[in-house]
Image 1 (cartoon, rainbow, N blue to C red):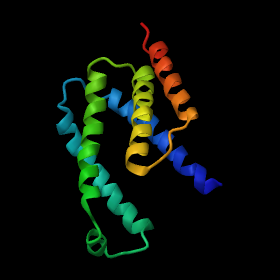
Image 2: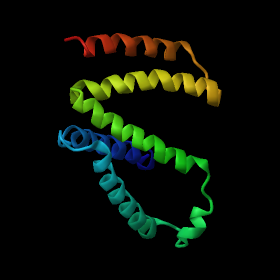
Image 3: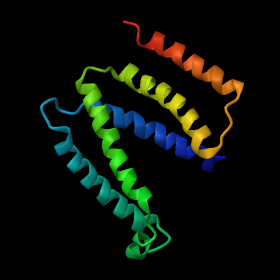
Image 4: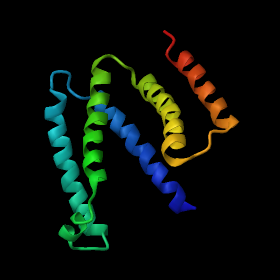
Length: 142
């Protein structure tokens, strides 16, 4: 059970800290300059974790297993990071930006799941989409 729960706990904790960091970014810094440091730190931490917890010690052999996904993931992560920084610079509040993004993302992923992974869209998912959209109205009322 713990193996099922701890990853979500890590995601939640990391996401809270992530949003605090993105919202606290200095207003006058170029987000892409900041992200060069962010990704440098991430690369070093990943390298340390690879050798600390990895079952393999041949990093080059592991790199040989790469496909397009790692490269696409890198591009997408830049979009995520920059998007959040620009959203907060545009005035989004921490209390509404993440919830709004998550609701819209949930709807998009229901469609992605159905179209790309043959996941079923049942009445419960349709009801969830409606609830998400109604929630967005209430969350974003001024």
